[in-house]
Image 1 (tube, each protein chain N blue to C red):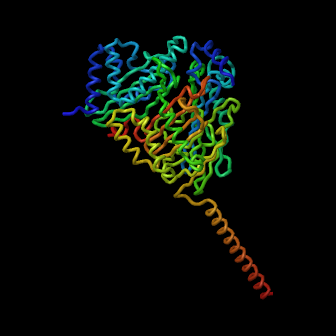
Image 2 (image 1 turned 45 degrees about the vertical axis):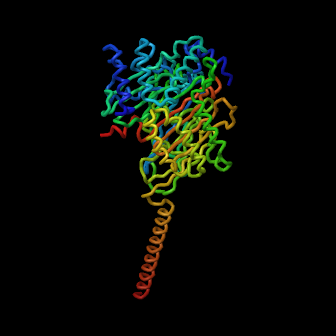
Length: 318
Length: 219
């Protein structure tokens, strides 16, 4: 029988657990209904907002490899690449900051809520600076919301290769904006400045009134571009869950909005310095460049939510 | 604002690099909830690391390094006084619901969030309404954000949100079903009162006329 994504994840989770001693297992595992642990994520470095679970830096090589294999089993190939690039970016930041110990790949934490199971609900969390994956599994269903991705620097070079962890999120959004006609742009571009995420960490359970350009006012090509943009977040999770999620979001397309605030010009190959938001009945995506002592385009936070199903609330409701 | 000297100063002050912190802005995000008879506002205020001393001086007014309950109440009251809330052009009187303050240590690191909630009663009538919210707290360093939450009451529908560039002034147009239309209801009530008054006056005068006529007849 073919292995399902859930069975792969459960296998990877059990393999990781098998590498740990009793004390480590105790620190890794939380009750499924531990609301505090569920909400213990942030865009900030762990030195500023401590995480629970096991840090990568405290694991030996085989434990660390098993932990990353578990994360990989929950994600698509491109989703896992994005996670690795975010972590590599933090390592680059550490180097750029003279080896500052508050950054780097060692400072990402993994935790499991509940017991890994092919039937019963459980949750995998993985995150640190600019990363918070909250993956709820229930049977063959998987939910990735709420998830925060970020990048600083959002463009760097590693082994001679230029990397932009959130480059497609930037390129696809500006391409969509440029595909709009003047009337559409007038509706999509908000007349006010947005300094940060509206529904970032600590804002669980809230839904703001949508604004901008509604998808029915777009043509077929523009709607396809909007869905392609959305796929940068919906496609982080493993392929079968991503497909189910995209089907849901496609069905919502006529109730989905696109809003933009900030500069509309961007140098090719670099990131936008503008905020944008995609919002539908089951979706909130925010992309927010950060004005924190440098070029906002080089420091980005993004948020991905399903206001009706964050932490897989619908899958686990009794 | 030049960030280089600020970043260097922040590193010296905290031991943390400036790039991870909110810097020279005082982020103030407001979320507004609308019900038929009530508006609720939650403001989250996050002073950046380069302005926290200035903000803290306005909170810890006796500079003893502790934000006392009295100082919390006083500062929350100041935030409330710097805000303006009106419905259909009529100012509302907000009531403080709660105020939560972070530790000074968190504020020093640019991650301390002050959360202030207030609400105000709304007259129920009026099918088409305009709520105005203004925030002018610390406007020289503020980065304002304001949004309306999707109303839980399905009778209430957000029509439009308008803001100035800085988001210090916000207008929310919304409609609500299941309530009397205010101008119509008031107009109808007014007309009914006028008719009633005219009728009473007419009956009274008629009665006076009859009484006068009767008294004349008996003279």
